[in-house]
Length: 195
Image (cartoon, rainbow, N blue to C red; front, side):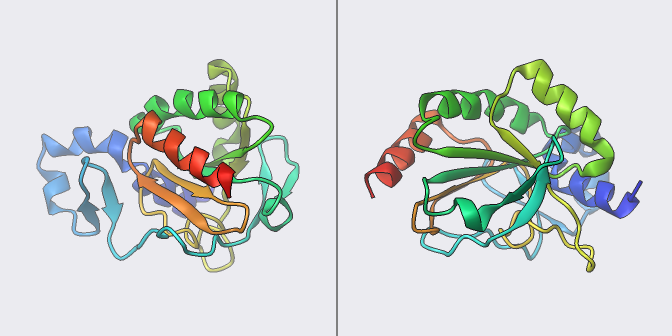
């Protein structure tokens, strides 16, 4: 098991881990995390993509081992990219909303959940997705030769959950770090579908 991968994915999924450290005071000593509004800690120095930015292309595999290339999907329909972890409690709250969006816009919108837990935890990811009845496509992020996430790092993901809505032109139309309101996402989707 690649321990660096697990450590990085756990750091990104820190919202679920934070309560364990806050009471002991150990988290207060941590210098690499910056709390944002909403209480989602972020890895310092990582800046998320803003609306209007070009969405980076990527190629990784899904939970079935099938290759997925984002460059081939852009232009067909708007896409939602949700960066999450099985260790992230806010992600568990958010995922049923993502499922409802997937069901409602199945023919108009591509929903992709990018798991940051890595290949070593693939069975746990698959088990969780199956248990919860999620039917959107789940991709498993990988580390490249420089120990960087192939998808999360280019997208500036410094914590989970992080959600991006990418329009047909391949531009970021909406960014949300932490829990989002379903009605806000709905408005962003409606706007992206009109373009």
